[in-house]
Length: 150
Image 1 (cartoon, one colour):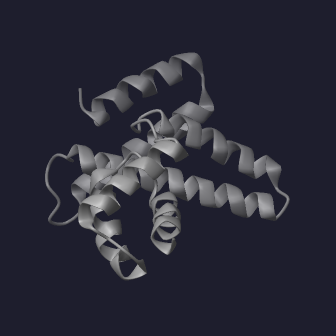
Image 2 (spheres, rainbow, N blue to C red):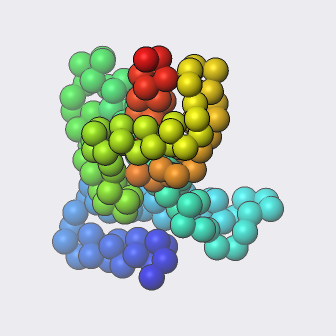
């Protein structure tokens, strides 16, 4: 079952349950999928990697919005954003824990023979490919800097 079919089924369930947070989140996902499919030159169907990237972008947008609202002391606006993050995140692959991510990145560094910060670009490129959907770029970058800095 494709992501779009899963979203459509979840929308029906959310409508029956009158779950407005889930409904808003699911409609945002469906809208983003339709927009990406109708862009000029876009393929008819999204690949799994495209779907993961799209979902990660939606999660990132909502987390950034929530952070801005919290910085301004607007918890009433931040809470719906964070609730939407939870709904959208259920369609993403399970995220690696910090120790598992550190171990995976150590393996990438060893395989590439990276020895310092000059190799950060190569390591980031390979790690981003291997860990797509399993960790966000910010976490990967932070840990790679720590590992290459030593």
